[in-house]
Image 1: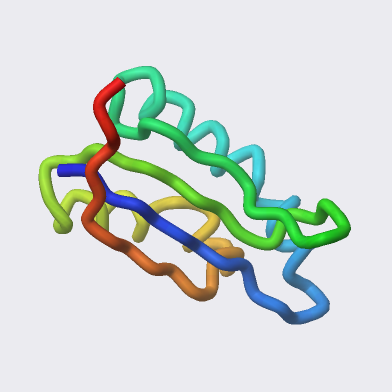
Image 2: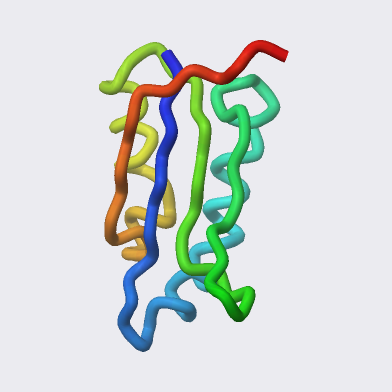
Length: 95
């Protein structure tokens, strides 16, 4: 099942520092998921000045339980980076 995840960072003064502190661990966590197809696409949401303020991800996982398990262990969640996470069922268009 495919999911669209929109995850917004906190808006407090420490938010950019939390993102940068967790970034390498987050990327290390998601790289194997991209390699095996569990993540289809992902990247940073930017503000008008080009600063990272969130993330958008398209994931393909067996079900919502698997998605929630991944999110619960991701460094952007455990590190307090993502503060507002929306998850929607999704279907990529055929190519």
